[in-house]
Every structure is written in C-alpha cells, then in structure tokens.
Length: 396
Ligand SMILES: *Cc1c(COP(=O)(O)O)cnc(C)c1O
Image 1 (cartoon, rainbow, N blue to C red):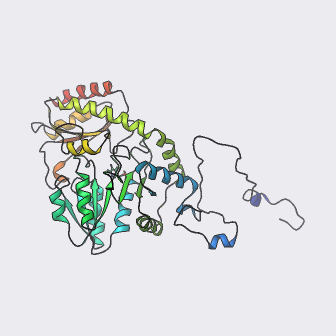
Image 2 (image 1 turned 45 degrees about the horizontal axis):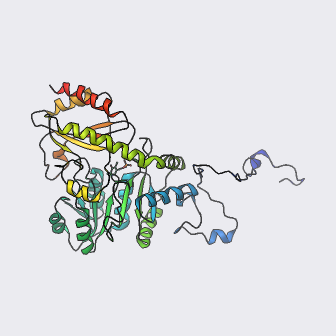
Image 3 (image 1 turned 90 degrees about the vertical axis):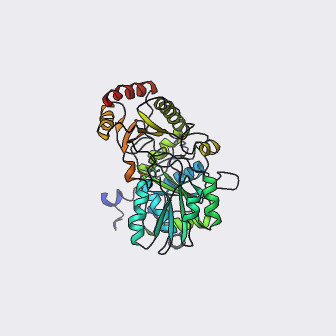
C-alpha cells in the first residue's frame, strides 16, 4: 500500500485479491484445487510442515485436497490403505522397482507381464545392478526355481498381458512370502472389481498393487495416470519417499477427470465384461481361430484359478488365428474392421484391436499363429459382431 493509503496498484490487487471460498455449497463432484505453492499461515506452520500423512499440505507436488481424494478413493477401490499417484501406469510399475530394489537385488517377473515393465528390467534395472528373471506364472515350480537369496520382489499379473493366462495367485504369493520376498501385482485387469488384491484369500494378499488408472478408472481413453497402493504403513512410506525424492506429480485437471469417471467404473467394468464374453464365445465357434484366450472360457489357460478367485473379467480377450493364415491375411482382416479401431490401450468406450507377434514377446510362445488382441468398448454388441463377420471376408 502506498504511503497515502491509496488503493493498491493493479499488479498487487490482482494478486492479493480477496477470496472467500464458497460457504454452503455442496456438490456431487469435489472441487479442483491447483497449486505448486501452498501458503502457510505463519513461520511456525512452515517449520512444522510434514509430508508423511494427509494431515496438512506443504507443496503442490506432495498433494492437494484434490489428489488426496483420488488417492483415498483408489485405496478404497483396491482394498488397500494408502495410494500414491503416478503420471502413468508404466511410471507406477517403475516406482515400485525403484523404491523397493537396490544394486545386488533380483526381481522376478512373469513371462506374460506387461511388456514395458519387462523392458525396464532388461535395461535400466540391469544398468543399476539389479538383476531379473522371468518365470512361468502358470507353473508354481517355475517360480520356486527362480527364487534365490537375492530375490527381493516378485511381480504378479492376473490375467497376463495379451495372452490372458490367469495364474494361481494364492500359490505364487504364498511361495514368495515364505521366501521373504515382497509381492507386487499389476492389478490393471482386475481394477479392484474382479477380485480383491489384498484379500485374495482370507489372510492372504499382495503387498503392493499397481493400477494403470489410464484404463478403467479413466474409461475415456484420454487420461494417463497410475497408482501404487499398499496396506502396510512402512511399505507405503518407502514408496512415498522415493515418489517425493524423484519429484513425481499428477496434474489437477487429470485428477478431476479420474474423479469424474470413478463413480461409473463398476458399471462400465461389468458392461465391458459382458460384451467381451459374448464376442469371445462367438470366436470360440469359428474355424478361423486356433485359440480364444479369455479366462472365463472353459478351456482357457488358468480358467480354474479365474473361477475360484474372480467374480468378473475385464473387456479383453485375444484370438490366435489358425496357422494356415499368414500375417498379411490377418492384417487384412484387421484393416477391414470398421468399428474396431487399431490402437493400443484398453477400457475406453471405443473397441480396439492390435496384432501381436508372440515369438518376440514370450520365452516359450505356446501358439504358432498370429495373435490379435481385442479391447471391447461400449458399442452395441450386435454391431460389433456384424463388424467382425464382415471383416472376416478379407481373410479369404
Ligand atoms: C496399460 C497398462 C500399463 C501401463 O499403463 P500406462 O498408463 O499406459 O503407462 C501397465 N500395466 C498394464 C497391465 C497395462 O495394461
């Protein structure tokens, strides 16, 4: 203020404007709070600031009311207690490795895990002196053989990426736990709906659950985010400390979109599930394919484990075309599809399709033909079936 008590200049007035948060305004959706700077009422409050729990705020990167709400809702969804948000699902996988492993440790990864997580182990983790082994998640003895005195962390994924095998999670968790290794599950497929990662059986669950929120929690194919959820406070603090030191954060408007989509997550999950099962059943009766990979199908790998542990399935399945069809023929089928678009990711409203070259993805590819992964959207199932039928003409 000037000496003569004149009104402040516009530059100051536009910054130190009066602001009163709305009283008596209650809405269905929470507000979007944005901040890098968080203002402390006095020096003592600044000196006493904390970051370990949600009792206060100190800097936007460490949490805002908006990110706290999303963290709490994801923790609730997954049956955990604490959640840390990351800018993508892959970044969430990375954070778990960085927080829980050090040079000399070994991490075990299922052979059918999300591919970029395997790449991270082969490249960065190897460069930092952390070794890895891939195990066959459908063979408990394969995990037993891979465990060594250096094993600190065992990754799990259910169902497996692209090939959709559903492993015997309780047996794998028991084995890792008996060995003293932590377990981390990529829970993107189950999404907190198909099974409870922290209570797979009474008294038995994973230590860490990672979720690509990019998929079902977003549901819109327009936001990238990931989460790391735990039940154990000390494990959470290890992950949260690394998260803080590495400077990870998520944007408030992306959090807003997640919060907007979460209320319909269960509804969407079941709709995608029902549609995918109808399409998978349709493929199961077709002579063009050698295998339909969906854990709810009777002869699918891991069907018994899926049936024992799950109450639902994601909207994903793959088909392996009969060997008599060349890759070029299968690609012509894909190109002839009109409703199924060609693109990565899943759990959005639009149905998607991607061909995969199994021989480059698995230590022991079980099927020789060309694999096509379908992500079933929310279109009318009859329209999707008609699209598949018309595109199959391109195979001939
Ligand atoms: C998509 C996906 C990820 C990675 O999520 P992004 O947000 O795309 O990085 C990780 N794991 C699984 C199983 C996924 O499907």
